Length: 292
View 1 (cartoon, helix red, strand yellow):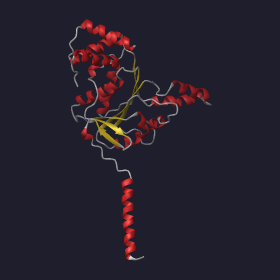
View 2 (cartoon, rainbow, N blue to C red):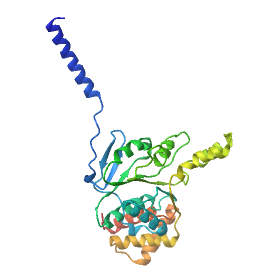
View 3 (spheres, rainbow, N blue to C red):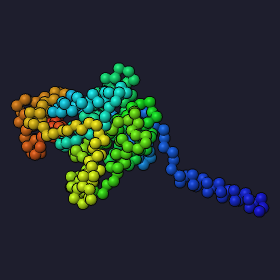
View 4 (cartoon, rainbow, N blue to C red):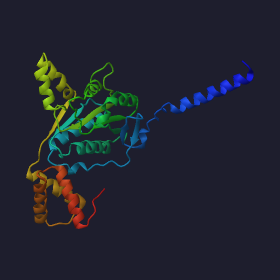
């Protein structure tokens, strides 16, 4: 082979290597945990997106769930202090502040920490990215921070097998869950799987009890089951009054009560979400702005 032919071949190889390098996925950037207290997990790029302004409410505004609120804050406080703590499943009635409580508890504990302020990070992982949970845990396990992994509205459909990845990541496997990671999830279902799916397994399996155990064992991975139930009229009105005081809305008490009850009647339910939607409507009609 002549020198010219060899040179031409080398040039072609260099261009081929350059082309392949551009096609190869770039390495995920190193997480900048000091950038924020909250992050969103991007499964496609295996990266964490900082959230500088978190959409949450002050914990004093979450009414009607005093017992579960105190339990979750205590569990979070112990975890932040490096003490044993449990994964938590917040389940029950929609609109009663499950996800709001997780975000508010994180903020409360971080503010109350006398040392290492902001050492507790909140990382949201979307339901559809649950299968990437082992990758996320691998990314977090060597960090000097402690992490609450938060999955909102967690549930699984009939043909969804990703719940097995969640089971293994929570308590299974050789490594198990890293000491600096805990999982908080919210769901309308106590067992995370459709009831008819569980019943179908019971009716078709050779050993029905074993089939059901396989399905409900996922929720057993959560040491805390915190139930949220529909609120009473008095609790609903207390939520409304709390929002009005907090945001400084000016309205007559009798008018407020009448309008709040009418709003709930037109929605066919009473909940924290309905109360907040009423407050937004009320503030707009009064021409007043709400606090950030």
